[in-house]
Figure 1 (cartoon, rainbow, N blue to C red):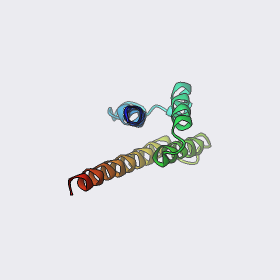
Figure 2 (cartoon, one colour; figure 1 turned 135 degrees about the vertical axis):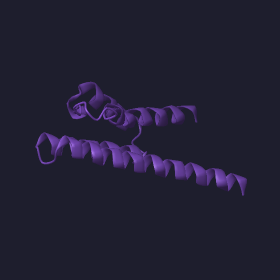
Figure 3 (cartoon, rainbow, N blue to C red; figure 1 turned 30 degrees about the horizontal axis):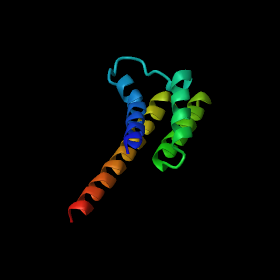
Figure 4 (cartoon, rainbow, N blue to C red; figure 1 turned 90 degrees about the horizontal axis):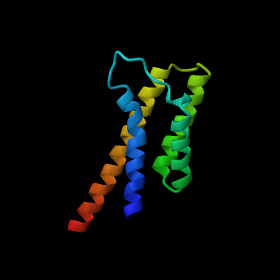
Length: 107
């Protein structure tokens, strides 16, 4: 249970990086696709959580968005918006699952 909580915490931190970077709208958007350390974090996160479909989905989306940005098929800002939207969906799904489990325990 403790390790599962740590993994979820890591997921939240990794997912929050783009949001923290976009907190200042006048600053240019950093391209996390070009950050080797960030790429390694996501690769490690995936390797350690292959059965977690939420993490797999986010990593797959990130890789796809990075590829589209690198081929200049979509702008970086669009990729960041799509990432933020999907990250929010994953976190909302997780919260709903936890609330349902709590509700079932109290029923």
